[in-house]
Image (cartoon, rainbow, N blue to C red; front, side, top):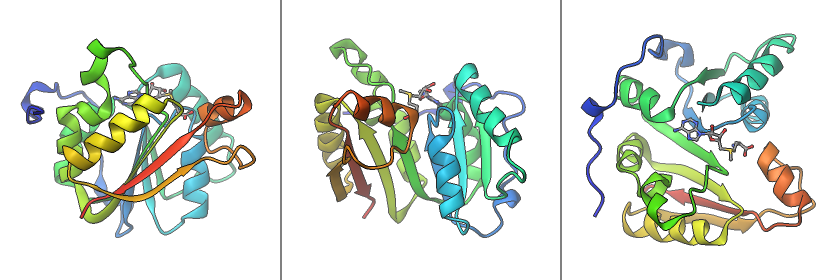
Length: 200
Ligand SMILES: C[S@@+](CC[C@H](N)C(=O)[O-])C[C@H]1O[C@@H](n2cnc3c(N)ncnc32)[C@H](O)[C@@H]1O
């Protein structure tokens, strides 16, 4: 049994308030732990009719994303990239905005030890809060190179959170990697699991 998420325990950080009017009437996709932004940049380019919010908490990774954005001739209007912990950002912004259409968690930190179970996203009270803000019919994608992580995510998204499998695939070693970690794992010959779940 996972505790309910109590957002009053999450400190309000300055300068994290999002102005939802930036997204206009576009459907909203959220990427958590977007690293250097490789997937986010591809996604907004391929989906101009979707607004993406891309969050990364680590300074070095976010700086590398920022640098890519600054080097573009015109920054994508359908992307908001922020350096933030997703738990803080979501706790203080999601309730003021529209429901999410899609969520990406690509190669999240695996926290593989048994005692780290509550740090894995699928086991967090935060996941309940996040899924409350996903539209019915909305999708959440989680990718990992770790079989145990994949099996636990699959089991708990179904059992604890009541989602349905929408698509489950192995990333083809010959496909174009979506992220830096996917590139690294495919180059090492590792299996990359991609699980897409749907909110009924
Ligand atoms: C293993 S890396 C994967 C990065 C990228 N998605 C990729 O596939 O190349 C996981 C990333 O998630 C970020 N992260 C972990 N927890 C986060 C959180 N609560 N909010 C925002 N970013 C987070 C970490 O800083 C790290 O950059």
